[in-house]
Length: 276
Image (cartoon, rainbow, N blue to C red; front, side, top):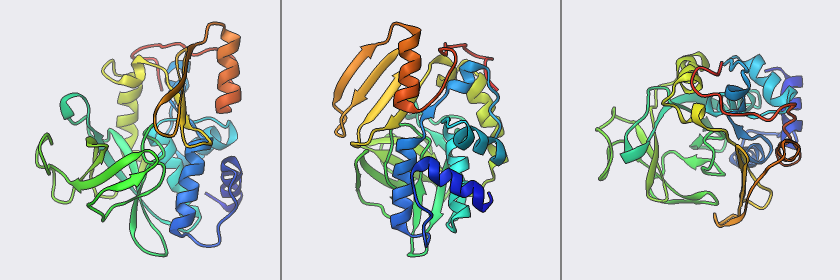
């Protein structure tokens, strides 16, 4: 990512170019990203290809002002952080599902980010509802965040964990429930192509079964459009508004006005085989 591309990305986030890659800067950029760039799977149901290449992701997130899911959002955000001088490593994770069973390999993409003022930080702008600020990877106690109370623990530690995991793997826990298991071996963006394909095409993937567009609101809450159902929650997670949108024009207006996403047609669930 060159300097002009990084500046355009920062304008998308409403952020100034930082002087140094510090933790305070990282915290600000993560929160701004969660507020400005939606977590969404619309491409799968609009028949748009999902291409895990930096230029294509920049074109989508910055040029077209769209969002995406984990591979896209964390992939391109990691490239921005690298361009700004942060030490960034892409890591693979497997998401815990029902009965705390782990998902497929390369199920999720997260970032390990090192700042000039010390420490390794887990950064994730592509999981939907999650931490709003970076999590300290070396901390084993509770980490309070507007998104919940988080802990990072050794893989397999405690009741309910699946398997023992590889030495050094970490489980991320939110409000007492395991979210995903992080592998600490460095990866590259191309490693996640198979995972993106599976989530875009498999009938077992929740992304092929439903529509979602979601972001953090300016007050620290969240707004989510699932198909035609609009949900707004307060910073504490309490639902403030839930309503069904009937007219196509109303749905498109919500995408445009509340998420900054310009669409010509209302997306509908296409099911397995419908994505890039």
